[in-house]
Image (cartoon, rainbow over the protein chains, first blue to last red):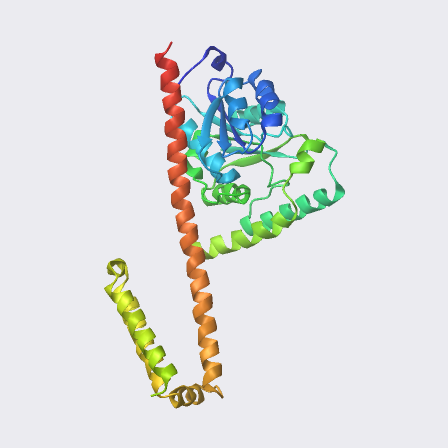
Amino acid sequence: MTKTASTQLHADTAIIIPVYNEAEMVGSVIKEIQTKFGNIICVNDGSKDASGKVIVDSGAVLVDHPINLGAGAATQTGIDYALQDPANKYFVTIDADGQHDINDAIRMLAHLKKNSLDIVFGSRFKGTVENISPIKQVFLKLAAVFSTRTTGIALTDPHIGLRVFNRNFAENLKLTLPDFTHASEVIHRVGEGNFKYDEVAASVTYSDYSKAKGQPMLNAINITIDLFFHRISKK
Amino acid sequence: MILIQAILVVGFGIFLFRVLANPASYKLKAWIKVLVALFVVLAIAAVIVPGVTNEIAEFVGVTRGADLLLYMLTMAFIFTIMNGYIQSKKTQEKITTLARRIAINEANLRDFDKQSSK
């Protein structure tokens, strides 16, 4: 795998960004991250817009799904790609729409290393949330209760896209749920493998752009049903 | 034998023949073939002797043979739907693996080209 000059920044860390129709935002998101991290892997998940070209032009690595497979599948592809390089010791997943702050990821990474944890989740409810609708806030809190009940892993914000984890966790993750349900799958893995986890406050900015694109609340029902069936078919 | 009986019997017979003679049925498990054959034989019996469904229905505690058929059809329908759902999930998983392999290979190749053109 290539090590360009800029890879000197956090050379042991791979940033993984699943991208779907984010041509408007992903360029500036990559540029922002490039000031702190050299190794950025963008998985273009069959976008219908110019996301792929924007990624190539930005200088980040492009891994290009020929068809749309879902956010979970894209995340796993990025991890698989990053795992090929033994120099990658740490992995960060972050959304492509600019809602996360890369400085939070740096604090999470430090927390993970200092306490030798396997995974650190960002949490909107430990940090400052800007411009969030009350309905969405209630929905996210309910999701947290549901997740804690079903997995036994206590997280205040299980559906956040910002996570930092080590190589051991990355090798064991193996996401099979293609869609947004993968957030719950990550947490299930933590429980299954007895991985050491923690949460760190992460600020999230809901721009009008990301609000317009955010997953509709009906998805909560889909997620629940899918998880239910997945659990049943596994037995 | 009335016309509808003849048509149905011939229809079921052709169906059974097509299923068993089809080379793809080689992959079907033996017990599924037996079930299909049994099902067709029962269907033909029900067509030739219409009263038999009523008798079976009464035996299992349903008043009419037509009701029994409806229940069984409903069950077969649900089974088919579930089976289709599971099959499509399996296919989806295969496609995901395939697309992922293509994406990673392409990225590695691009990477290799970049290295060698330096």
